Length: 252
Length: 291
Image 1 (cartoon, one colour):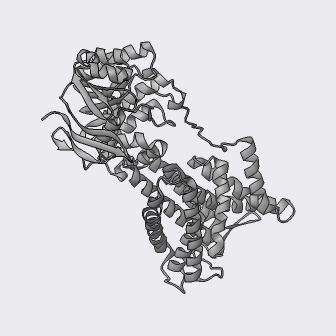
Image 2 (image 1 turned 180 degrees about the vertical axis):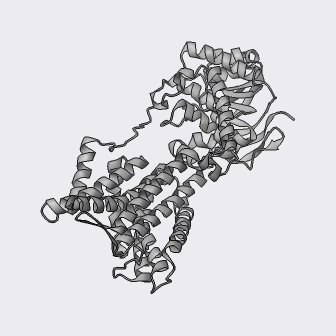
Image 3 (image 1 turned 60 degrees about the horizontal axis):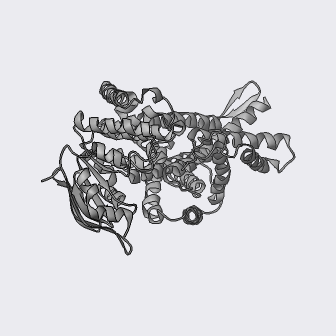
């Protein structure tokens, strides 16, 4: 069984079928990209996998277990982290605080020991802090550690969101248009980081991306989605040369 | 010495306003809804304390009836959220405002039906006890109110700064989507905000009844607490307390030094001034989402 499997997943909004009996298989350790014109249903697929939406039909399996019954706040616990197209961070908090909140889920301490700050709580905090520092080093966020999110540039916020997803130590990382709004230079950095996340951290990545340069550079496999259906799955080159995909992009 | 007395009574009523305002802000931050019944929940807490403590009702010792009251008010806040507020999630702000205003009316009538409309007094251990400080007569009840509020502020600070639950609540209030994906059950946090707001309203009511009379329309002073929350920035917990203290202090001083009638008016004049000069409140954390 593949690492992430979508089986005949359907999502309807009123009379509109956004995702139509979609089946996809994503293997462990690969970078898989979803491409397609606007409104094709890519983000809907993302929101179904991350349980923001509940699909009308079909099933999703991750690492051998069904995700159907899970709620959005459970998925970080089963090993899935995600970022958002429009960046969702804690705006009135610093970069460091945003990342530390990510470690909050790991806490098993009770309220009393937290208030008196017992040794075990302190040790756990130290361990969490080390993880956060490592991720900040990895993504070059150290200069911004004490800065408030509200004062950061769009590109930096995007990286902070990526960092927060990594702090959760996911097995699967969902990136929703990671390059949108980034400068050319920032996109080059991002490509290296995505490759390192796969190679060094061993995290499987599923991403939605419009920037085909980035997709060509990092993706192992690509699925082209048109009108809620998978039109073609293959290497970036294969998919981009498929006449059906070209037709969907240019329009009939 | 007169000033000392005015200060004390101002601080004491300011603490009550501040605690109600804290309830407003807490619910607003957690659920983006304004609970206009917060003042009436305070009144209800006051009546429950009286009902538990006074000798013509249950006659429990004061120190026992306070935790029981907190338990009742906490459950009460939880049930209001589960039974009523969950139904209107996703509706417009107006729907929620009308719902909570209606809830306030219901609480007033229910309290009137159970306990009657005449003023009630709490038989607390502080009744009638005074401390003489030079020529000033300082009421024990008022000192008690201030000490409890300081203690409560400290507890809340530690809760929100140190504990997982507290940090999760702050996170969920800042960004619900982000909170979901770091594993925070946002719905539970919203219920919990109502629990805390219920307990806070209860404590505010207990403190209010410790220093004066209570009747079913006492809850209308929630409007002053609302003004306090707005002055504080409606989104800042310390701001709510400070706003409460400002309103509380203005009242006795304007009552003493301005023509009669002004003491009820001045808090709102200050509110209008704050809105004109600092529209986001004194302690605002300005966070307008830029697209």
